[in-house]
Length: 185
Image 1 (cartoon, rainbow, N blue to C red):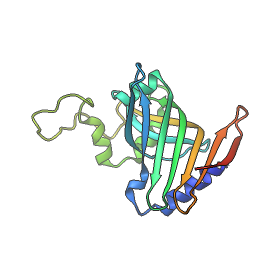
Image 2 (cartoon, rainbow, N blue to C red):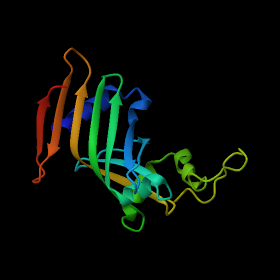
Image 3 (cartoon, helix red, strand yellow):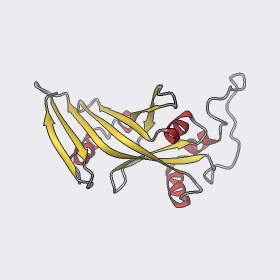
């Protein structure tokens, strides 16, 4: 297990009582290179060290990652004062590519979470501020539901506790091995 993963597991455990610790920022770029940053919900870490998030194929995030798979995640844990910056390559999994993975992640969502995927197309005008209506059956994943696997190839870790602070870089080499180096913060 990579050293950064052990640290991340400890950070998540130490912050488990804080719901906001399950959110991190994901930065992407559009076709013109304009950056976009949004908050996403951490849905787990795969056995092969990929961060898992879910999304909707009708969103800008999906379009941006489809055009440019390179992205960066930034995760700050206020309780432990630690920051992880992940450089990643995104792979988007849709229903047509891997139905079992879609069904597994859909099943983990609450009913309220599932209903959000049936409110209508993200980014379109809302009906005069009226309550959003559910359009469809949320017992099955809609075809626009997707899972995004963020394949981590670089981790920049910073611990802001103490003086001096502590920072280390972790990178995956071409053989898949993780190399770690302590650096000046």
